[in-house]
Image (cartoon, rainbow, N blue to C red):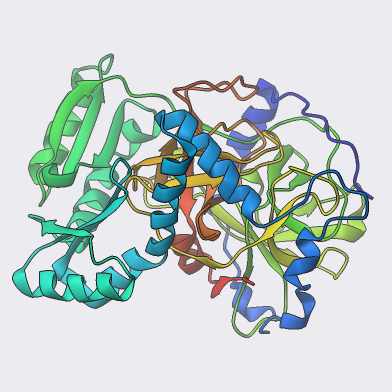
Length: 448
């Protein structure tokens, strides 16, 4: 039975407990989830129609189009366009699923960057050579994107990734404390923003890191918002229902977070959930219900860089210790009756600039959407704007609403108190699913 939901409050004591826990557990040895069991049995996944079947007498049908329709509504409102125009843009975005990964693999050093022009609804690909341009056009044609724009980049994605990681490692402390921000800058390569209140010592660190980089960043002054973990302290009521879906709440000794996508490891029959690394620690049992019977145990973790150093992805994996809460590859959108507006996940993908993404989480209790404004902030997170995030949403799913592909998990928020309210400057940070799978020893995301 599903229990009632209460938001509770994310007090300072609860957050302090999370910070301390993250700091003390980061060095713990991580188990390989592939070593504890075997390939998941597809039979455990219910018919996706059962996720969305409307009960007799229901006043509002639950269909898989709900997420897309809600994304269209929010996009139209945020960009001041008609719903028809918003629908056209997001329909075009739906063709892009997996394209960035494909371009990286097939073009290698010839690939520069993928972005999406939301105003025109066009894909733009930057490449480094004539051969790469010809190949990119063939790949785009395979995706039905013949009208996409192909241009030139001074640097390959590989060069930019390497340079960004190097700069981020040199500036780990000022990045973590919000005195410096790092992003890709299109033709500029990399851009470092130094907070207006940062002192001479920070400025010198930035200048030194820029001088040593193989891709010299543009350095600018500006306001740098301070990140915080989107975890929630306290012991408010929590969900107690199977299956355990992406976006639903779990409890641990220091507070609450949201679960993300269900995953699998070749050679293992266990069920896994991705979530945020700062939400607990290895070996700790976490509960979806107030009973030790329905526990999930932390078995691998890479705690967020904003606590422990750059180069980590703020992710963790829970293994379910019994069949009480079997995994189903679906997202809880909180929009309706049991099974509570849940929608099947169809795949996973890497992100790209200006991608329109949505998220859910137990605290905001709804689908919230926004546009990617930074694909890598220096500690392995994308950032997207407008989407409301509050304490307790950490670990929840971030996905592409146009194709229901998993993209990231919620890790941080900017410009919003943990208890809200959200505002037009709210920013959400999410750790990439593609990196978490590799970092945590998993094979892929369960899909339907």
